[in-house]
Image 1: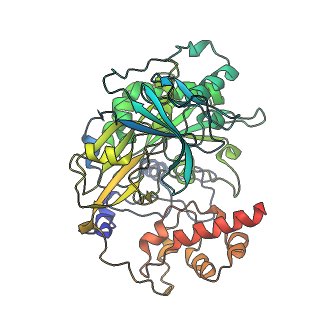
Image 2: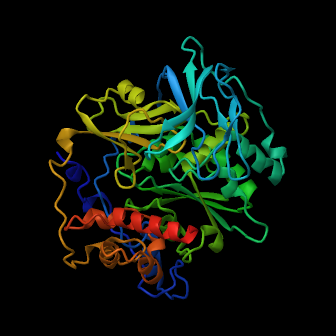
Image 3: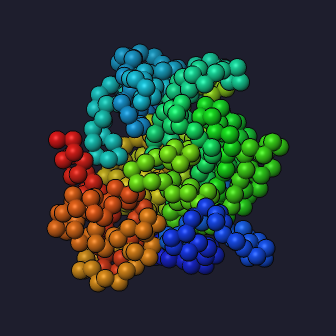
Amino acid sequence: MKVNDLLVKDEDESEKGMSLPPGKDRSRGAGWMFPFSLFASLFSKKATFEHGIHPAYHKETGSLPIKRLPFAPRLVVPLSQHIGKPAVCCVNVGQEVLRGQVIATADGFVSLPVHAPATGVVEAIGLMPSANGKMVDAITLRVYQADGQEVRVREPRDVDAMDKKALLAAIQDTGISGLGGATFPAHVKLSVPPETKIDTMVVNGAECEPFLTCDHRIMVERTQDLIRGIRYAMKASGAPRTIIGVEDNKPDAIAAIRAALPADGTITVQALETKYPQGAEDTIIYALLGREIPAGQRPAAIGVLVNNVMTLAYLGRLLPAGEGMVERVLTVAGPAVERPGNYIVPIGTPLRFLLEQVGARSSAKEIILGGPMMGMTISSLDVPVTKGTSGVLAFAEAQLPEVTPQVYACIKCGECLNVCPKFLNPSQLGLLAAKREYEEMAERYNLDRCFECGCCSYVCPSHIPLVQQFRIAKAVNREKTAA
């Protein structure tokens, strides 16, 4: 079995969604007159977006309860685990620290503190390898293996008594960033300017990446934490209502959330069609609200705020307890893993130790952080788990292509146009990328609207590495702009 076979297109995974005709208002029924029967039929369809793909999902770990992994002898804790400025180290080599203690302070507003993920001693402070290949500043802790490793530093808070300013400061103190992979500091996203009005908060529970199921288990097992976190986020942002979007391949999660919803109707849950990339910010907003984000704008421009379910569940768990982010739930799966599942893992756990604990076979040859569609392969097992690590996938050599697929010229088949959720022309963008016409890609063909979901590369019969080309083009354009 090959990786391509594992992700083979499966049209039977989900029913086809329904979209309004091109050029019409995408709001639900806006400006339209329907007979009642047709109107009811429209609302019976699952919420979805146009285009996209149906890979095989391999969500077997979604039925397995969350488990806790042992602590590694040493934890490597990067000072930069989020978008924004890295934290500033505030401990010294040889210093003993307690689990939950701040070991690096936030450096400004768009920054987060770092908390000790274990009780132990600071063994080293310096450059260490990261998942993207860069060397980053990190604190290495030698863990006290005989310690009970309960969180020793906490400051319980009366969240209901806080005003918005105090609430946002408390959220920053937890060190929570976006746990769905974007790693945007939670307090920054919830800091809505006074002139901006948010009418709806969208909570992203789609988890459309193949193999990943950690969000699924959080929704099932930590439902009250999620609802509590949503309440805090609504108070901080001023959003009067919330819609939780969950793909319909997670009926137990939908049922658990529905049973916990408040009676006032301010929080609702909506089933989404199972389709990739349903969990992207643009697509889930369109699926649930029928709104499109203008080019170059953020969701706030259309009155929407989007947060991941894992982020809000941890917010609901840590904020009232006054604890910092010291661990996270992530999925460990793939054909080369003997004991796949969803595990609570301390931040800073080296991947080598993690894979040993889940019985990764010696035949494992490729490790992917995140999902197979948008995740990244790593070249070293010495990199640690960070706040943004949603999954670790291991593939054996038997599942890898024997040779790199031959890249052929574009045959103008149009498959990439049929699947692009942003209605771009990946074929034309690819031709321009081959000629290094990067500025024209951005100016005439809306390259910046691409969020690199990988649908175009997935369906390309010529095996053109479109997403990789687009990433290079964006990087070159950013460098030119900065210069």
